[in-house]
Length: 242
Image (tube, rainbow, N blue to C red; front, side, top):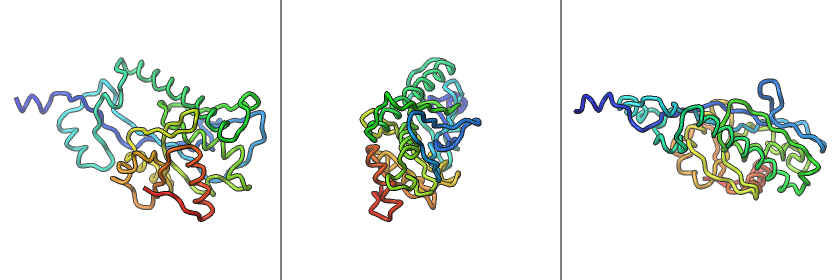
């Protein structure tokens, strides 16, 4: 019985740090954020959205894989239903994740323009980021739009010239939502040069658990709070911490 169990597939997914992408930069030769109908700024610094890479919904994960991953800081064992809650085939899940990303982009535009008090009917924002699914880049799309339009509001960059990374969904009224795989995303962020990580406040504990050296956590609950924290970071003011 134990021998059979060792080789039987388990309902888990193995995840590890994925790519990061600077929403202020380019993706496949095209700007991630393009704005028409309003003057834009030339920005310095980076706003890096973060991802995880997970085994597919049909992958066989066995006892040995799970045990090995439990002893590694660069890999996590997650319930398959938590990563792929919709079920279906890999192609169906991919289409679902891309729809989530597209919807997240639309909401991020609305949230950013609402934060700035700008008329969405006069400004056209196009977001372009290939090969990434899901809604967890919403906060960073909004921050990127704000940085390109007004920066810190005083002539400087919202990033302060730093490499800022993070994660979080966004709602049209500017609320930041929790996401999965935060401890892995902090590793991806530090690997790619970030020194500050914006994390949904409810996930501070998970983010601290495997926090890489040299990465500062900043908890956020709203878009306006994230903007205020970045301004304070740039100006040497009081910045919230986990």
